[in-house]
Image (cartoon, rainbow, N blue to C red):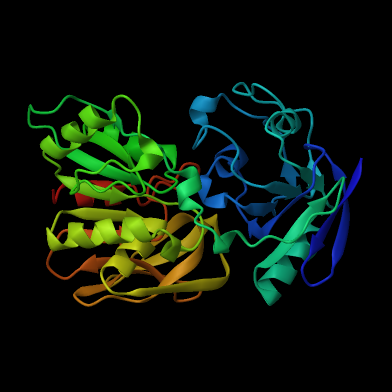
Length: 366
């Protein structure tokens, strides 16, 4: 079956469908990663986006078991590849990429010239687009919605060792968290309490968004368990839409609780501390973004997936990392307090693990 990718500038690209037979609209972005499409497709930071994968061969190693995914299902709106391989060869493969996309009702097109598509976005900036297979649909800008509220957990989840015994407890704000963030904390012996984006640990009111029979007991557990640190996760869309998380982090800063932000968490921390954010021309989505640590000669190769940046560093903070490609901010750190954030993914799954030490650096300061 043939389909079309139509961009808001009027350009159209015909391709062969290998996903669900439905039309969809979203923000068209590209990723230059050579591996890891199952992890990328299940990364909640891609919610509302039509993803172009620039590596030419996609599908060759199939789809692994869901325990290797970054969330419970596919989060992209649509997929564009140059050459789809329907005969996967990998010992972990459980199904083909096409079968997976169809089961989760995600459209996908095989369009030969993804290089030209990527060059267009690099030149003009991120564009809205739509994959049309059946009925036509209107263009849709996901950044005008609160996407964080759509992907965040609706209940409190506790993992790791029981309270006490000298074990540290970290509150993880789920703004669309990649699964490997919690895994990186758990393997370091940390007790992780994952909470919804709009959860306020300093309030006795339970948000309607995650009421369930055990919520009252869980709320008491969070409030009476000693919280040693806060982690703000990655997530999709404009960080300014996560207003309730920003307000809670303001209270965290007032109490001087050790805090680590990751990706969107970097932007939320900056906004809560009085900084500002803005949209990048076409964002950073790859596994090879070079980041220079300030006041050093160290350059780390990082995995990234975001469309916004911190451009105004808040008072009492300084730049921690800078992108070597475009000079954009890649992290901030407080001048005195154990409060910090990075724009890249230190959990890096898939991708380089050069920066997983960031978790150790943070945990040592709890």
